[in-house]
Length: 370
Ligand code: MG
Figure 1 (tube, rainbow, N blue to C red):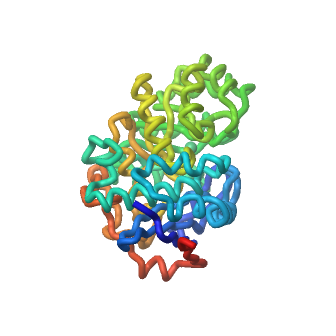
Figure 2: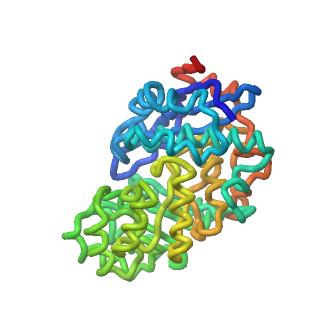
Figure 3: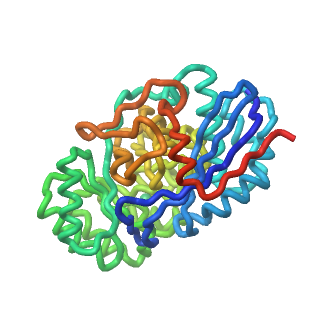
C-alpha cells in the first residue's frame, strides 16, 4: 500500500443546538476531513477532531492544518506501507499534535481495510456487533432545560447520561438530577474545573452513586488525581490526562483513576488507542470511547474502536441527528434501543457524501507525491 495523494477538506457544520462545557460554547463545528488515495484510486477517510480553540488540548483546526501540510503528510506520502500500525513510527519525529496525526492515521486504517475488504472493527479486533450509546449533555441555561434534555435522552433509550459539572454547578445540580432520576446510569464530567483543595466537596458526590467523575483536576496531572482518588469512593475517569499508552500505565500504577476514556484523536490514532485498550484489559480497568463532536467519519472510527472487548461502558457515541441536520456519511448513524450497530462493510462501513461535504467546505487542498 502506498499513499499517492492526500486531500484536506476543512468544513463548517452548524450544530443543531450549541454545546456548552466549562471550556466554552460551540455553535458551529469546523473540522478537517482527511481523504487519502492510493495508486489504484481507492480512498480512505479520517477526521482531525481538534476544535477551533486550544481549550480542550493545545491543538486547533488551524494548527492541525499547518502541521499536516508541512510535516505529517510529507512524512507518509509515497512511503511503502504494510500496515497502518506503521504510521505512528513514521510520525514520531514530530512531537505531539495528536489530533492531526490521528486524522491521518484513521484515513490509512480505512484505506487498508477497504483494500483488504474487511470492516475496520474486525481489523482492530472488535468483538461486538452493537455498541451501547451514552448521551453527553452540555451545560444548560436552566435546570428545567437540563431536565428536559435528560428526559428526552432517557426516552430515546440512551444507556447512560453524562452531565457537565463545574464549581457552583455541581452538588445541588447532581442532587436534583438524582432526585428526579433515581436509577439513571449517571456520570459527571468536570473538564478539569477543580483543584485538589476541592477534595472535600467532590467527596460529597460519593452519595449519588455516579458511575464515575471524569477529569476533575488538571489536564497534565496524574499525581493529584491519585491523591484525590484515595479520598473518593466514586471512580475517577481520566480523559485529558491520558495522551499515550505510557500515560495510562503510569496513571494506573499511581492509582490516579479507575476508568479511562479513550478518544482516538487525543491519543494520536487507532494504534495507540488499541494499545491503551489492551493495557486496560490486562489490568482489569474498564474503558469507554469518548466523543469530540465528530462528524460521521470520526464517529464511524470511534464506533469500530468501541467494538473492542474492553469497552464495557457506554460510549459518547450518539446518533448523527443528535448534533446534525445532515451528516457527512450515508446512511447516518442511528441509535435503536440505546445501541448503535457496528457496520460490517469494508473500512468504516459508511459511504462518504462528497456532494454534501463540498457544500460545507471552507478550504480544500490536495497534496501529491512529488
Ligand atoms: Mg471529557
